[in-house]
Amino acid sequence: MAVFTPVSLDDLSGWITQFPLGKALSIRGISSGIENSNFFINTDSGEYVLTLFEKLEAEQLPFYLELMRHLAERGILVPAPVANRDGKILHQLNGKPAAIVSKLAGESQLAPQPVHCAELGAMLACMHMAAEDFPIRQPNLRGLEWWLQTTPTVLPYLPPELQQLLSSEVKFQQDFAAGQVYAELPLGPVHADLFRNNAMFVGENLTGIFDFYFAGCDTWLFDLAVTVNDWCVDLDSGALDLPRLQAMLDAYRAVRPFTAAEQQAWQPMLRAAALRFWLSRLYDFYMPRAAEMLTPHDPGHFERILRLRISEAVPALA
Ligand SMILES: Nc1ncnc2c1ncn2[C@@H]1O[C@H](COP(=O)(O)OP(=O)(O)OP(=O)(O)O)[C@@H](O)[C@H]1O
Ligand SMILES: N[C@@H](CCO)C(=O)O
Image (cartoon, rainbow, N blue to C red; front, side):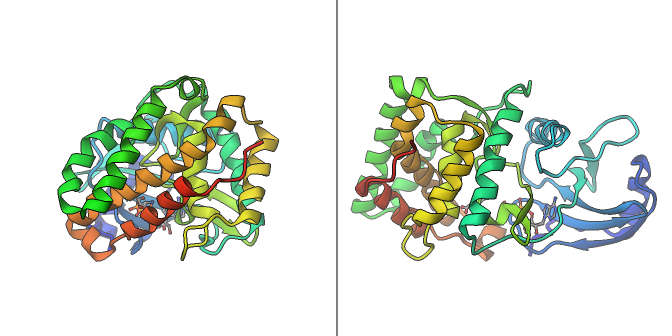
């Protein structure tokens, strides 16, 4: 269940004439995904993905779509937004902001091996560098400010021990973000939600990364930490899987070596990345929207990851 706003072939047929894609031949709702309404569409010129944005603000959308256009133009494997005859990539359909992007081949690799992690690590580093000169600036809207705002909302629902863990970690991150090491971290537009379900592979080859709708400007290391905490962990325990971790870090480093500040910030950043998703999952759990109740993400998974990143030394970045 992930089509909140239906679109018929009839709706599509009139609307699509503004794009150089020929006629619309078919449309099929995509059932996974909980943020937007997504459809695979077939046209005279091939297969594409149509997205209707359900809750993102129209003023935030140019950042995401223009970033995808910018990256695609630089050879980064991301869906390329399709421009209409006036060059516009953000439109309206059935009362919602809408866009068409190219369809990536393949499928998600939900049980990644080191070879997949290496592909992703290299692409992530290339993406960070390719986005450096992207001219639109939008903060990571799920960054420290959001953590500070959201923590008081969820705290009353938690037992004392979890209240203590959440409050102390937010305080730790606030202090860390105010320090010298943090100030020296390289930053720019980042994906910020690069989980296993947001990349496609054909066999061992990465065909692209998608779902840029949590992207924003943040440290590159935060993006890598988010990615590591999903791709390089044992999903039952949350423990780091060293061969996958090493493969991802080696591939990233081969494209862009880590700075001294990044090496010092690695463990705090893995904690920050765990906190980010623990908090958003707690928020969605206690304040669900209708669709999220159907596909709840387990906050306990990121609570476990956070505890481990606090208590266990992680391999150095160097
Ligand atoms: N450009 C694309 N190429 C191929 N498949 C895509 C593309 N975009 C989306 N999909 C497919 O649609 C599904 C849902 O997309 P997406 O993850 O962007 O939705 P969402 O509503 O933002 O969900 P969530 O935030 O929960 O991941 C994906 O799992 C993927 O199968
Ligand atoms: N990746 C997020 C979902 C939003 O994309 C999570 O697993 O909590």
